[in-house]
Length: 194
Image 1 (tube, one colour):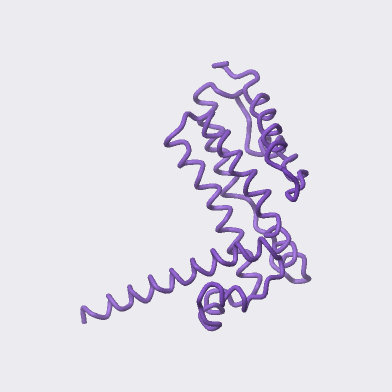
Image 2 (cartoon, helix red, strand yellow):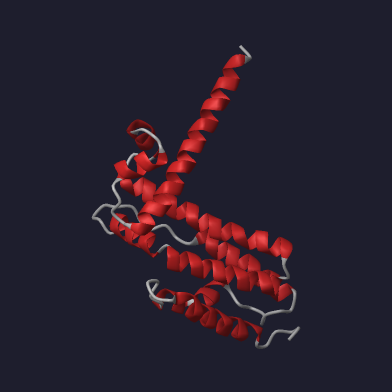
């Protein structure tokens, strides 16, 4: 009887590895081409059609899970940065990561638009984890006296909205850097510690 749980655990971990491999491959493929064939994603992930469809029964499920997965990666970076950097520096570096996500995942945004714009399709998922991460960083900066008091995540995202106006096909990094530096300058204005 003690052998059965080990087998179940091995199967679950194998299934989890398959799912993660599918997500990694799908992230790359859907970023390159919004309408990437699911069969090509399964093949590149090294899984059979049955395994693929057991995890993601339709395109919408895969695209939305890739989006959630990528957004969670950006959100998780906030706490990681706060553990190793002063709050102001953590916020600025996180802004760079957010910009990199926005610019390099433009194809993924197209895939999300395709699946959420279809009649009867799923609703577009919100940026909740990223909003929460921004809130965590802003509170840490405010507590440290590094930014003006009272800035909300909504205020922050309105201030950086220009990121989504930059063409990701161009040399976007210098423009994004200048924009984010301007936003940081604005956040510092009126800071108690500044």
